[in-house]
Amino acid sequence: MADTSTQREVENWIRKYWLTLKFNQDFEQKKLTLVSGGRFEFDAVNKDDSIVINISTSSAKTSGGNLGSGKLQKIRADIYFLLLLPETVKRKLLVFTEPDMVNVCQNEKTKGRMPQNIEICLVDLPENIRTKLNGAKKIATKEMTSK
Image 1: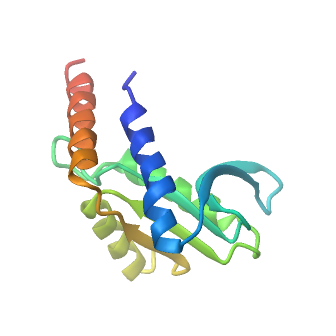
Image 2: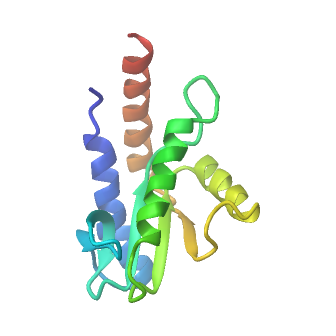
């Protein structure tokens, strides 16, 4: 199984630093109750639960250059859970580290295949974090393709 500790570290940096600067508020990973009655853990939630965010470090394409259907299904699942939030949530966001995934999602939104009320943001990672994330992705790709 792939080591996802670097991806979790990047998510934590986004939650603790980037989002705090962008919104001038603190965020934490948190389980919220959905309108359907279940609970789901979101990647970043502000103190009054009015801003809820899912974070993705995935690129849109596989190592072979194809559009990653599994990666897109994960984003669709994130969207689904954002849609199940109560009306008290004023802002719902998907935050990405990869420009190609932002482009795919923006295209889907333009085509009316993604809810208009879900905001899409691209994080500009510092070079040291970008390098570490890219290295972790290369290792994961090598593990997957060597089987």
